[in-house]
Image (cartoon, rainbow, N blue to C red):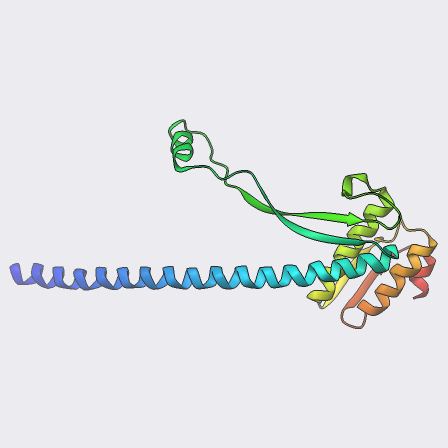
Length: 182
């Protein structure tokens, strides 16, 4: 019985050591992946930010736009976290988000909230095209994204579609004659 138990103990000890080594190895892999993900995200974000600025300038005929990473919420100290857990309250962790700053030509507008409906539509189109240009999908489905655009903006929109169609297959639903023509 002793020999059986001793052999079982030795086996389980070896298994436990293997599990500990695997846990350490997994932690290292996780750290490497997180670093890689952060690096790739920052690089992709910078590319999208530049493309967004460029498309914004084309669509609005000047001005500029940029994306900013912002942190919402505030970091809590260990004491605050412990106190919230004792009270049984949910602990909200801070999170990152994206803010968009715009600079329209001949206007003093910095916030998206101050834009008209058509300007917001143009801004969202610029962002959509920037993401598409940086990482082109096999196809892009656009359902009346040009509905709020006037004739001059429709022409710019159509020209951008022409350029995007070289990288991505476009499926477009529109009533806009200029878009249909292109």
